[in-house]
Length: 147
Image (cartoon, rainbow, N blue to C red; front, side, top):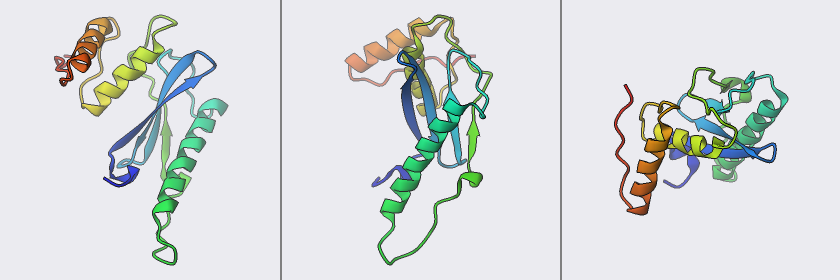
Protein backbone atom coordinates (compact mmCIF):
# COMPACT_ATOMS: atom_id res chain seq x y z
CA UNK A 1 0.00 0.00 0.00
CA UNK A 2 1.44 3.32 -1.09
CA UNK A 3 -1.10 5.70 0.42
CA UNK A 4 -3.89 6.04 2.96
CA UNK A 5 -6.58 5.42 0.34
CA UNK A 6 -5.80 1.72 0.29
CA UNK A 7 -7.01 1.51 3.90
CA UNK A 8 -10.52 0.69 5.03
CA UNK A 9 -10.17 2.96 8.05
CA UNK A 10 -7.77 5.53 9.43
CA UNK A 11 -7.66 6.33 13.15
CA UNK A 12 -6.86 9.68 14.76
CA UNK A 13 -6.55 9.56 18.56
CA UNK A 14 -6.81 13.22 19.60
CA UNK A 15 -5.85 14.78 22.91
CA UNK A 16 -8.20 17.65 23.59
CA UNK A 17 -8.77 20.09 26.45
CA UNK A 18 -5.32 19.36 27.90
CA UNK A 19 -6.28 16.01 29.45
CA UNK A 20 -8.96 14.16 27.47
CA UNK A 21 -8.66 11.73 24.56
CA UNK A 22 -11.23 11.16 21.82
CA UNK A 23 -11.10 9.04 18.69
CA UNK A 24 -11.74 10.36 15.20
CA UNK A 25 -11.99 7.65 12.57
CA UNK A 26 -12.18 7.89 8.78
CA UNK A 27 -14.18 5.14 7.04
CA UNK A 28 -13.09 5.48 3.42
CA UNK A 29 -15.59 2.98 2.00
CA UNK A 30 -18.64 4.60 3.57
CA UNK A 31 -17.25 8.15 3.41
CA UNK A 32 -17.93 8.73 7.08
CA UNK A 33 -15.74 10.48 9.63
CA UNK A 34 -16.67 9.26 13.10
CA UNK A 35 -16.08 11.04 16.40
CA UNK A 36 -16.07 8.88 19.53
CA UNK A 37 -16.00 10.79 22.81
CA UNK A 38 -15.99 8.17 25.52
CA UNK A 39 -17.03 10.47 28.35
CA UNK A 40 -20.41 10.75 26.70
CA UNK A 41 -20.40 14.51 26.49
CA UNK A 42 -22.75 16.25 24.10
CA UNK A 43 -21.79 14.89 20.70
CA UNK A 44 -23.89 16.98 18.38
CA UNK A 45 -22.24 17.27 15.01
CA UNK A 46 -22.88 20.99 15.22
CA UNK A 47 -20.49 21.32 18.18
CA UNK A 48 -17.78 23.83 17.17
CA UNK A 49 -14.96 21.62 18.49
CA UNK A 50 -16.13 18.47 16.72
CA UNK A 51 -16.78 20.43 13.53
CA UNK A 52 -13.23 21.82 13.74
CA UNK A 53 -11.78 18.30 14.10
CA UNK A 54 -13.86 17.05 11.18
CA UNK A 55 -12.67 19.91 8.95
CA UNK A 56 -9.02 19.39 9.89
CA UNK A 57 -9.15 15.66 9.14
CA UNK A 58 -11.05 16.27 5.91
CA UNK A 59 -8.43 18.82 4.81
CA UNK A 60 -5.70 16.30 5.58
CA UNK A 61 -7.25 13.56 3.43
CA UNK A 62 -7.94 16.09 0.65
CA UNK A 63 -4.28 17.14 0.74
CA UNK A 64 -3.12 13.51 0.66
CA UNK A 65 -5.36 12.92 -2.34
CA UNK A 66 -4.13 15.99 -4.22
CA UNK A 67 -0.50 14.95 -3.68
CA UNK A 68 -1.26 11.66 -5.46
CA UNK A 69 -2.39 13.44 -8.63
CA UNK A 70 0.17 13.61 -11.41
CA UNK A 71 0.91 17.13 -12.69
CA UNK A 72 -0.88 17.56 -16.00
CA UNK A 73 -2.50 14.16 -15.59
CA UNK A 74 -5.99 13.12 -14.62
CA UNK A 75 -7.97 15.71 -12.72
CA UNK A 76 -10.03 13.33 -10.62
CA UNK A 77 -11.45 15.43 -7.86
CA UNK A 78 -11.71 14.31 -4.30
CA UNK A 79 -15.31 13.98 -3.10
CA UNK A 80 -16.63 17.25 -1.69
CA UNK A 81 -17.44 17.63 2.01
CA UNK A 82 -21.13 17.28 1.12
CA UNK A 83 -20.43 13.72 -0.09
CA UNK A 84 -19.08 12.77 3.35
CA UNK A 85 -20.91 12.28 6.62
CA UNK A 86 -19.74 13.39 10.05
CA UNK A 87 -21.16 11.13 12.76
CA UNK A 88 -20.99 10.93 16.54
CA UNK A 89 -22.58 7.69 17.78
CA UNK A 90 -24.45 7.93 21.05
CA UNK A 91 -24.96 4.26 21.91
CA UNK A 92 -21.40 3.20 22.70
CA UNK A 93 -19.75 1.87 25.85
CA UNK A 94 -18.54 4.83 27.89
CA UNK A 95 -15.84 5.23 30.45
CA UNK A 96 -17.17 5.57 33.97
CA UNK A 97 -14.26 7.51 35.40
CA UNK A 98 -12.38 10.65 34.50
CA UNK A 99 -8.96 9.18 33.78
CA UNK A 100 -9.10 6.12 31.47
CA UNK A 101 -10.08 7.84 28.22
CA UNK A 102 -6.73 6.95 26.59
CA UNK A 103 -7.21 3.28 27.44
CA UNK A 104 -10.73 3.38 26.01
CA UNK A 105 -9.46 4.98 22.81
CA UNK A 106 -6.90 2.16 22.44
CA UNK A 107 -9.60 -0.43 23.08
CA UNK A 108 -11.88 1.13 20.47
CA UNK A 109 -9.08 1.12 17.90
CA UNK A 110 -8.39 -2.53 18.72
CA UNK A 111 -12.04 -3.59 18.56
CA UNK A 112 -12.75 -1.72 15.32
CA UNK A 113 -9.55 -2.72 13.54
CA UNK A 114 -9.98 -6.40 14.42
CA UNK A 115 -13.72 -6.27 13.72
CA UNK A 116 -14.59 -7.40 17.22
CA UNK A 117 -17.64 -6.36 19.11
CA UNK A 118 -17.15 -3.53 21.53
CA UNK A 119 -16.19 -4.54 25.02
CA UNK A 120 -18.44 -4.07 28.00
CA UNK A 121 -17.27 -0.99 29.86
CA UNK A 122 -17.50 -2.95 33.12
CA UNK A 123 -15.11 -5.64 31.88
CA UNK A 124 -12.47 -3.62 30.08
CA UNK A 125 -9.57 -4.23 32.54
CA UNK A 126 -9.35 -7.94 31.67
CA UNK A 127 -9.45 -7.17 27.95
CA UNK A 128 -6.80 -4.50 28.34
CA UNK A 129 -4.52 -6.86 30.30
CA UNK A 130 -4.81 -9.55 27.61
CA UNK A 131 -3.94 -7.07 24.87
CA UNK A 132 -0.94 -5.76 26.82
CA UNK A 133 0.35 -9.28 27.53
CA UNK A 134 -0.04 -10.26 23.88
CA UNK A 135 1.73 -7.07 22.82
CA UNK A 136 4.64 -7.68 25.16
CA UNK A 137 4.84 -11.28 23.96
CA UNK A 138 4.59 -10.05 20.33
CA UNK A 139 1.59 -12.21 19.64
CA UNK A 140 -1.81 -11.28 18.38
CA UNK A 141 -4.28 -10.79 21.20
CA UNK A 142 -7.13 -13.26 21.16
CA UNK A 143 -10.18 -12.02 22.98
CA UNK A 144 -13.51 -13.77 23.31
CA UNK A 145 -16.30 -12.14 21.34
CA UNK A 146 -18.71 -10.16 23.50
CA UNK A 147 -22.17 -11.63 23.50
